[in-house]
Length: 236
Length: 236
Image 1 (tube, chains in turn brown, cyan):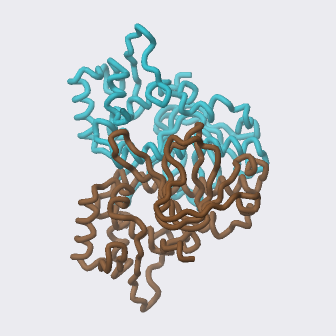
Image 2 (cartoon, one colour):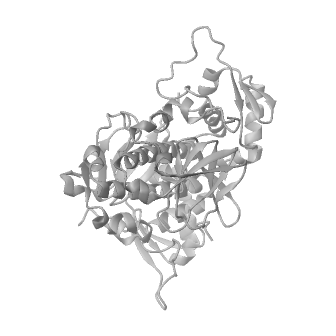
Image 3 (tube, chains in turn red, brown):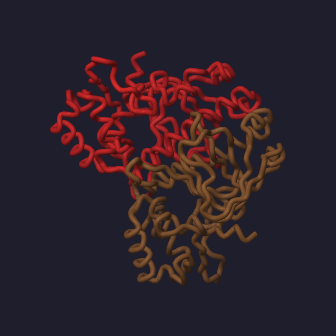
């Protein structure tokens, strides 16, 4: 599965466990004849303002949702992982643009088909709950965290099974390093974290200088100590 | 209904129309034996970390959800209006604190009862979609808008039927003024908009100096020209 270049897929993330690892709880959206589409990296699935007729479930890869202000300022509002739902709209039009960050596979679902299945309705509710909680956490990041805390939180979000409630730290004697492959450019990270690209680059350099990360390539980061990084996310 | 001191109740807001004015589409949560609780102003309904067992629907009044960082920084993540749902949790614990801003009435619902009713499931899905869209808009505000744009957006949010998609401006010959009663203190507004209280106060003074608003009392604001205010929200 070469397209799963995001290290923290839903399966590996305890925070997302319910919506991803228990598809049997309500069946899979694919079971009701959802069409599956394959996308390349940085393909647009739909634009803000396009007619909203379908619901989408990310099956593999990573997708970002973003909104634009008329003068071009952009905010990435969600970074989606397998199991996440998108394309929901309260009106006739999509309220954000969906663009892949990696190769991706997407199930396209007819909302009416879901409404006919109580099991899938429950699954949909659980997915939405999980995503709303992530949006609340993102609001705290955008509204109250410093630039360093934002970048540290973003990097921790990519480390599976660490940093959340119930994280017990590294295994005894383990080195606690971690290799990350970034699927977002510095500009995309800036647009997600509510920062400028200059600030994101400066924070990466600061973290490197302080020995917290090693930058092997622009998109290849080694975390020298996961716990050390977590300590500066603002949640301790 | 003295407790409805928020001028923009769900009923008056076209952006929230679907979830509020069409309860018949899926029945009302109150129909399935939801208990109704009355709260005073600034009562806590539940704390972050409390056991999450129930779902709540705001029936009347205004409620805010907020999250705290360990050092006391606070972010208000949602300001809820009648028809909104809260208390959903993906884990066993509430991930935010719910506190009333005004006197409020709240329906307490058993999620399992909703799961037994396809109509209520659909209604729940629609409510969550609407709230997720509001969270996306809030992320744009927190991540990309200036202090003035944030305060202007907040004030416009309180003017019913104006500022959204499809707003046609004031009626011909109408004066386009509007009286607002604020139910949030300057500190609560700051915590919602990701600003300091000093910045919020400074922006209110600036708007007054520029003749865009008149401050009759700390919680009583007159908008001199709704369209003029809307022009500085960043969406034009």
